[in-house]
Image (cartoon, rainbow, N blue to C red; front, side, top):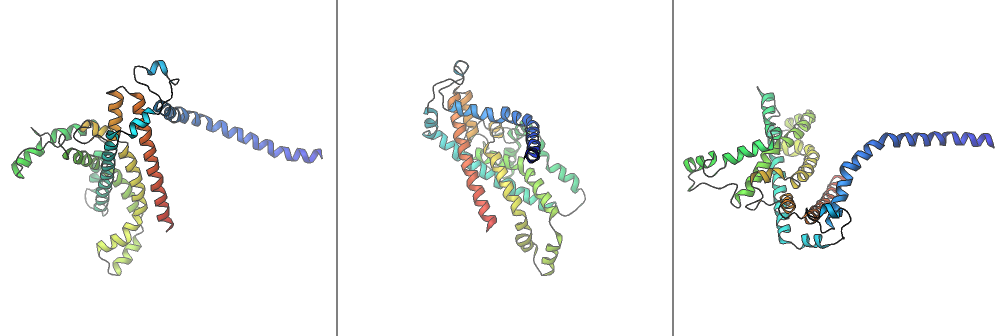
Length: 306
């Protein structure tokens, strides 16, 4: 009896020791993730339900009186829904535009030609350039008084007067969408180029032998194989554009119909010193984005199953 019991305990003791070793190994990573990600999120949730401002946060901390006024104020605010609509238009336009332009560029650079490597590297410049520098260049080019675009427009394109691209509706929103498309199409270009390189060539060759035109070959052979990559890109770019702040704020400051949700949160925090309201705004946006992503993933899962 005692011998059998010892045989049973030996593997159990080893398993416990392995579990302890495993926990010790992942403990530093877990602690770092908790401090960097979990704690700020929890603090934001706590602040969203407190009547806190920059003047009172040092005194109240986490012990302020809980209230739903911030969340109710966000949900009943016309400005919030207006900024949310602007954010959706901005995110969808920027996502579709950047993927379409990235796909066109990837297809154009698919076949080898002299200087392809150099031109590929040049295509990445908008993505790697500092956002402050490129935003300044765009502001100078689009300036209604001395900008090159307005000078060409009035001289060669017959414009009656210069256009204030960054200070007039709806040009301002269209311009910030165009800036986002230009700046992030290399991101889609890299993804799609990598996928195009990995496509098997024999299927396309078989389509050519069967008499398929280039457009038919792209629509029925290449595009279906790119769809999983395009779907992943759409998800990533949508999240990035939905949370984008610096591009729009540097170009327009959120004026002329470009007040997207992150800019509104920033203005609420720094302009009104309303930490509770800004935290509630961010919390509601996070919930809306999470619901949208869950619906998108479920739709994508059903498409893959079908």
